[in-house]
Image (tube, rainbow, N blue to C red):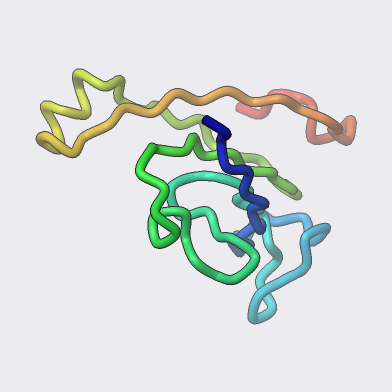
Amino acid sequence: MTAAVHRLVGSPSPRPWGGGRFGSVDGVPVGELWVSGDEARLPDGRTLAAAGWSERVPLVKLLDVAGVLSVQVHPDDAQALRLAGPTGVGKHEAWVVLEAAPEIGRAHV
């Protein structure tokens, strides 16, 4: 059996802290470019779900940050089930920093 290969199109997400490398939407800089996930889009505009993809797709985002971000804490699968019921799914998060300006790289308290 041969697995299908799908090219995904990044979905811009405007954020007030966006750095502008990904452009802007209605004057707000794009801070996140969502390149995969359940709402990922194919070049023809369909989501993977609309194309018949039945598996969950991990969310991958590229961030362009021009300010300080807050730390977020997400539930694991067990807590998500307790909080949201049978559709609850936990969230794992990892960051890879590709580039940081010296003034942004310092911890802010």
